[in-house]
Each structure stands twice: as structure tokens, then as C-alpha cells.
Image 1: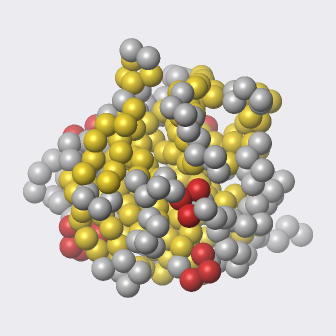
Image 2 (image 1 turned 90 degrees about the horizontal axis):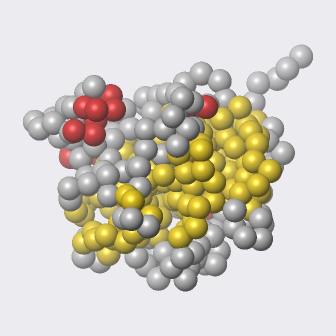
Length: 304
């Protein structure tokens, strides 16, 4: 008889909406995407800086938040944009995947945000979504736009550490979260509208080949943010389902993490003592949730 995977439960950590929720003015982004322009926030991009602070972005309202280890929340900045993903460089600055602008650069000391890379050649990106650093400083990011199974125009790019921009893979249906394998020879990309995670082998020239589906989800909306632990397991936030699935290195589901709040667990990041606490953005309630994990998270480029 099939035994369902074990379940890890989450608990509330910080409530953004309780202090910073906005409903008295419309969000163009939320109105176009959800038909709910009064959405108080839409949290994404959890990422830790070198001082151990947790940062979040708010796509709907163009805001960045910093949360201390004791759950003290500070709104650091607000700008005219749609920040969707965030990752920190090991020198301390952050790179934001902004759906409206492209890649933006964050100075965490001052809270200033300025353009980093807003064009590919003479064209603007369609709508950058998420990003991850390789150990050598190469930055992989998704350009999702409004692509789906009919409009397969999403892309994955790599901004090399030397400043070169390279196309990794094109013609994708809604590329969203992404994470590298431990040896960095494989790139896993969540294709939200396909409700699947694709695996891409990175060849010597940095392009993807032997691309195929390695994890197929069911229900919900599809995969969103992703992470990896020290054992090579891949975590996939299943937005709309209210869970994060943990897949083994061969793609086998080994357990899941349940939301104690709403169904929109959009992204996650490891932190806390021994890097064994998972911090999760739950965007329907505007909260950050946490879960105690059996395996620590993989050390990221920002802290190497």
C-alpha cells in the first residue's frame, strides 16, 4: 500500500499585513493579475543578508522589508516597481528581480534601489521573476512575463560574474523559481503554468541541453519559489496548494511542509540556528511562516 509522505507543520513568525498592509490605494499589479487592486501586500523573495536579517519584497506595493531574528519588522524602502525576487551577493549588495523594471540593485545599508540590468540588448525583459547565484558569482534568473502553455515565451538567463548576459533556455511556459544542483551541473526551474519542475543540464557553454520534466505536481496553481538542502533535496513551493514539497535528488517526493495560514506559500529560505529553520512567505495572509527542518539548508553564495 502507498504510504503518503510525512508532513512538517509550520508556525507564524511575522505578520506584515498587521502592521504594513495597504488597502486605501490600488495596486496596478494586483489588479491586473488577480483582479484585486486592494490587495494589501504580496510577499516574495525571502533572502538573508550577511548580518542574518531576513529580507522580503512586496510585489504588489513595491516595498522591501527587513526582519530581525526576533521578528522585528522594518519597512526599509518603497519605490515605483514590482520587486518579485531577491538574492544577496557575497559583497553585501542585493539583486532584485523586478517584474516591471528588470534587475535592480539594492544597497541594504541605505535602502536605495537603482537599475542594475534592465535590458537584453535593445529590448526590455518581459517580466523578471526569481534569481539564484552560483558559487562563482554567476546569476541565473527567470524572465517569466505572462508566458504560459499557449504563450511559451519565458526565458532563463545567466548574468555572468564578468558582466556578460547569456540566454540559457528560451520558449518556456512561465519560468518562475530556480535552484542549482549541488555540483551546479543541473538547473532546476519551476514552470508555474505547466505545474512542473524541469531539469536543465548546463553544457560547457552555459546553455541548457537535455531539458526535461523531472517533477510533476498536481492541483494548486503550480511551482513558485525553490530551495535546496545540504543533502541535495529540492524544495518546491506549490502556490495555491498550501504546501512545500521536498523531493529527493532522484525526484522522489519524500515529505511535505503544510501551511498554517493560507494557500499561497510563494517562496522560502533557510536561516536560523545551524541553518535548520525554513522561513516561508505566505502571500494570501501577508505572513512569514517558519518550520523546523531535519536537514540544514545548502550554504548560499551570499555567505560563502
